[in-house]
Length: 101
Image (cartoon, rainbow, N blue to C red; front, side):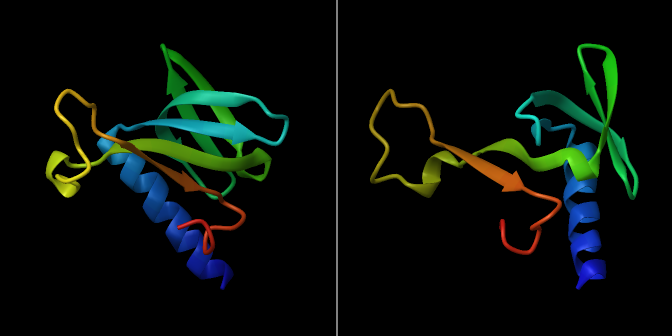
């Protein structure tokens, strides 16, 4: 089971790194770090924001969220003229990776 969680973590982090998506990392202390994932390994995630690099231990992360916009045509009956598309916030937690998706 631990190997499955590790594979899911690696797949998620690799995906947001390759797409250069902005993420929010919420720490146990309540601090929120924003930026893009530069790299990651078994124990840490390297985040870049406005030219500054920060290394965060995975054990201190509660969850990682990224913003993924929905397609305009996904919900044509719900969309009114002039409305912005709804945003879908995805969340990933290294500790509970099998329950968060």
